[in-house]
Length: 79
Image 1 (cartoon, rainbow, N blue to C red):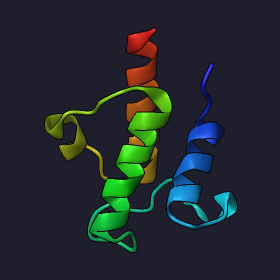
Image 2: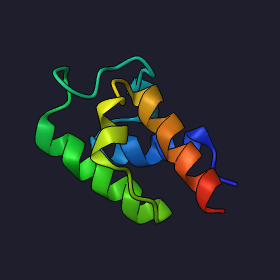
Image 3: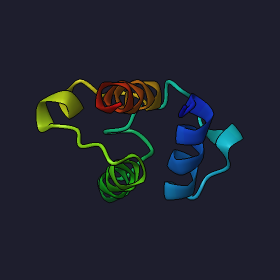
Image 4: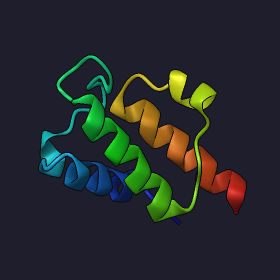
């Protein structure tokens, strides 16, 4: 079973941050995360967990926590 912490580790690695530097409320767009880093992060998560998020789903993702919940939901649906 995939945990939030495992997803956070991938997010931290993709953004070159320590896990403890991540705040669940950090905005993913228009915040400190550059758009190219965001795209690379999404690709890394999709590849790691063999899931694909639609543009419509990603429009709803505003924070790191939103992204974690989306990935967890996608994993649960695919199992």
